[in-house]
Length: 202
Image (cartoon, rainbow, N blue to C red; front, side, top):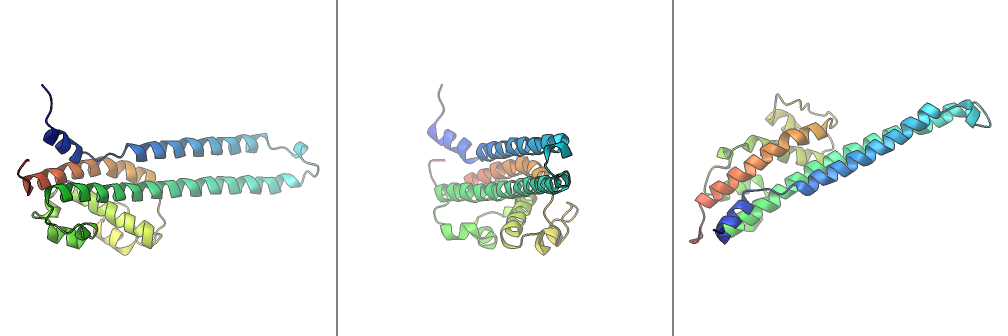
């Protein structure tokens, strides 16, 4: 016995497809690991015998230190991109589900949290793992507009290690913590939208 199109669509709406972000993170992780491994080998094999002037070995150590620094910067940038990509994915997916089931809502209201809250026929805060979504939203805004932990992120999500003014650290771990909660949030959000659907075929 087959599955109906409406059921297939519901399953699609309830699932956020973040596999591409996971693949991106893995590719960057491997690339950075290879890069750092290469620098490690050069550092280990470094010897004054490799230079015309033995004093140049210290200068080359500085070059290798720069490579370590650059690798760390690229890693941080990739983690920031993964976080902002996950939030953008939630935005796009939410817009698609709302437009399908609640066409009376102006799509322009779907990209502002206060407008979204007022437009939906249910309380957004009641959706499972709303707190994780809100943390992801504040983190996305801080990455894009502030460049460090913002006042809102620190104040609205206390107890999670966010300190206003701090540089972003361990964003890979933050992503791993938030990603499954965001999947749960999107599933719950889609179910609420379905329950309030304006369509007669659901």
